[in-house]
Length: 190
Image (cartoon, rainbow, N blue to C red; front, top):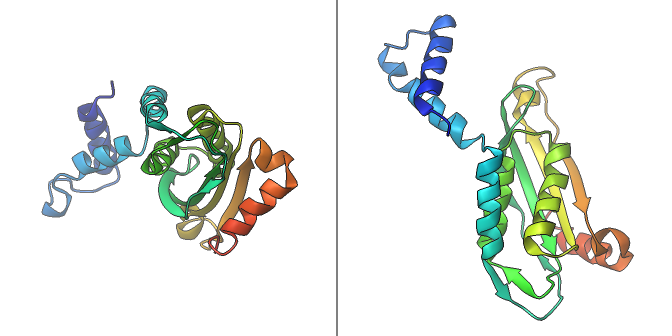
């Protein structure tokens, strides 16, 4: 179990070392709020595993194999190099095999996976693999467009978005399935 009080203490020490007067009214409670935010944005492997188990239990019988594709939705992660926020615009698609999952669970599990600070190039295939396991289907597609604040506020001080995909099962091996997915999300990707 992570100790929020210990995280607060370390953050207070860091702020003081940076020359910030944490007794100032503007900084009252800042170490506590900062600690809560960091813990919210850094899920442990055990926490992610628990969310995946909950996700996998929210299934409903479904005897069709028609493609299900989400509209784009936003989740936030942290850049592992600078520990600055990254905004991921995500589209998820899958072909059910005997059951479907509650639609809100697709967003919730994506958000949970995003809370492990990883490169976008790692997040996208990890999410696809987790969805394959939880949905019990080999046919999963994940499209991610990331906007990285580390590029916008430091370094190059400019930040194009970057897009990558992870295609599993028929989304990778069957051209018609892949085309249907890309046709469905074509207008949504922008």
